[in-house]
Amino acid sequence: MKNKLVLGTVFLAALLLAGCEPEIGSEEWCASMKERNAEDITAKEAADFTKHCVF
Image (tube, rainbow, N blue to C red; front, top):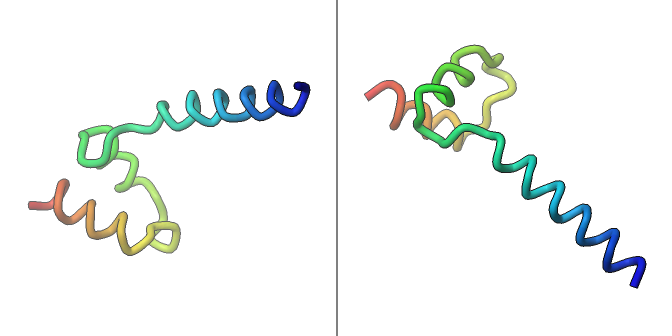
């Protein structure tokens, strides 16, 4: 029972934290991507940035 409570708490915390990130393609997301270092951006993020923020 204790393991289920801990697992549920961890899952809920992960859900809450994931909801704080701006949606890909939003103005907030584009602004945050512009502020990041190029070394920290993945290929998928770069493609999304080009698709949503450049064109």
